[in-house]
Length: 557
Image 1 (spheres, rainbow, N blue to C red):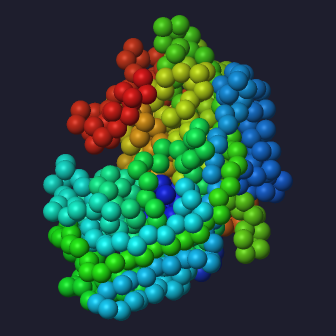
Image 2: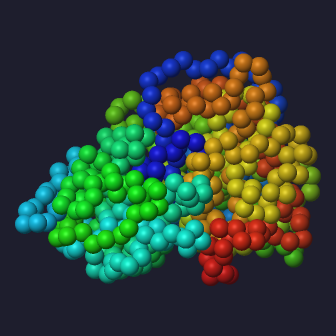
């Protein structure tokens, strides 16, 4: 997804959470000619967007009354289209159990004991404790070890842990990945989840992540702090603890770039020198002198989220137990904390959900059903870290069957007319052939990912299925202009600078509902091709995701 900021995503504890451009002053919206929305498909999509982005939905925040109303609308639409309920206990809803954690200001500490002196960083000004979903109070004092960017990538001949012992120690690392890493691997290894898993697997008891000036050029520390003070969410397992959490860490904190040298005080190199070496892939791990102390207090409670899941049964009894799963996240950010208004989320992601609904309508009413079953899920908790999609991928209701492919739609910025679509992730699996054929059938051009450096493939709900070993695609808006003087790239940049995650992401935007209907037709065409194929989709030989997550697939079967 274009214009991500890594460290805001890190606070969500997952590799993907949304697009986060650097703040910019308001500017005039690029001129976009009005296009008559005179097709039934476009009208259906517009009606759903207007309903989901209506103030009555209160921004569809996960677990809120407004989200529940939006979920009721989706269930009603699924029934109107002719889908079967595919949630828990024969209903439309799949329960998504959640933990919610908020960091408290009192009790937060990060202290460096070194060379006979104690350096105490100021909480929330110089460091931000991350919420602990396991305990309301945490405190740890231990020696610390610098481990570069906390990455072990054997396929890229890179190991930040070579020669050091992390058992019982605090890992200190920078975010991101070396500059030479390919985009998708940089995003995977650069995520907090990957770093936590790597240091915990080696026996570390805590993690301190240090910002750099480059990090904060993209996302100022004030923005990181603001996000960090908001409640975070995680999935809740049957035992009441965080689900799919991996080895536990007892404490975590993020340090501002301005305070980075305090963490490395009296060491052999400055924070800037170490950060440059990490980006160059030449950082050498070493034990820091003295000890670090981390402490925090967290308020933890529980809540229930919900996915809304419907199904079109496959026509072939031999293949109907397999499913192509369509996802689009229904949640958004709710009311603005600063009183600016409601975050309506018209593009993010009412439009994506409406396109998914139209794809379901197309499959249900125009032509034969595919041989395989098709599942449609409006999922919760994407903004909190792909939570609903992860629960669906890992704990599917029986009616979902065995997922063989995932098609995800998230925030298509359709505010200028286009003549193409983008299918992110096609290079990783045999789904590429179905996408190319579907685009040709619909008569639309297929463009490559316009922002490959952003590694969007690992940053929305499809990645929950990828981690479960399921080949997946992220269908997105095109970038090729269909009207002189109206550049989709310019329109997208304007939206990201001015209205992304702001109240002006609303139905007043010049949404191109005809283009949205075309994207729905492509989605349906891909589904028919995949659903009728004798063999299910497969990862390409040697693909990084197929290789890394194939074991997850086997474990689930």
